[in-house]
Length: 473
Image (cartoon, rainbow, N blue to C red; front, side):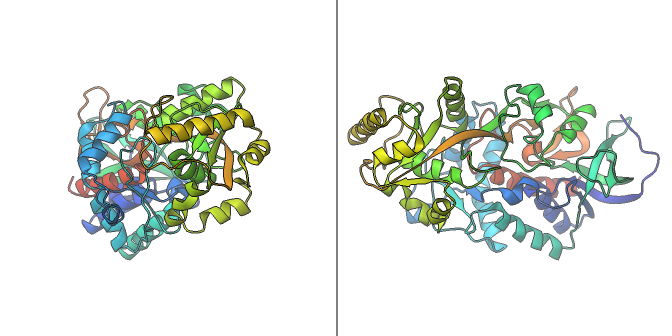
């Protein structure tokens, strides 16, 4: 444990990271009357939150009610736990699910615009995902940031935390950081010390962009596998949290998204077609023209299936007929025109033409389409057990398709916290005095597989909670 000899300044709370969890914790801390320092190592604020796709899982939203979708906090919690293989903390999962509607209404009160559409993603029992009008998390973040500034908040950019100071009695006292840090040079900037009179809150996110660190736990996620994350998603704070004695669980549970378009860097937008048109209404096939997975399964099942196809030497593709893309316009206005103009999605008048353009065995693809249509008629998918509810036969051209490939996306483990967001000690498994964690830095929420549109939910709900609790610490 480290003891700083003197402090350059004192605040009530030091918040490490400025994404959804960090800025939300900052808002609640300011509302509670706490003085804060939000430290962000990158030259811009927000991290992955500003490049997020702007999706939120909401229970009993107006979008659901208009379509008479029956949903509940219990069903959302059960979906999260089931897909997480019950490696999640059920108390935290249920707290997040119970506050989904509240956080949705909160964002609306801050000016976030949500589209009229609602959709379902792999692993969810019902359609419950709503999307920002801009189709980006930046819309949510900008409104949070405006509110944060109105409350007097400021984010200290290029502020790289190198040490969390925990004293001989086990209490976290503050941090040592580098002001005017230049990413990724750990020796750049001027060393500063801030005492946190109440607490330090860890909101530093994941390490999906840190190839060397992630390969310590998942060697197969090497340079061949790109990431959806921004470059600052690295593992230094994960190592620092472990050094000071935090209980860190499931670091090796690193989620890849299965559906990314290889023509794009980062997350891009092509995946939206792969998931919300092809997986939901169409089908996924390999180069041979065969389906290879339940298109409605969770991210882990589908990613594992794609990696298996790659080992066989096959590419994988998503296919949709004309009616499959109709819901996208409701969910994301102007989307199909955009991806077609960018040539991310291939359009063809006939299935044979599409197969030729993508390099898929047409004869087998034609057989697979016929089998799919037969399964839709009977309401049973004998091949993979996919739900056939609300599906229409795939007969109408034009046809659309694209190749897909997995990318490293989300770190599912992290600092274990109690239901109040207090970080736990590895030896005692009791809360560490003066230390909290939220968002992707915290473990125990998603287990073996995070469901789509549950990351923003987790960050906003738990960020608000730790901001309040730490202020009363």
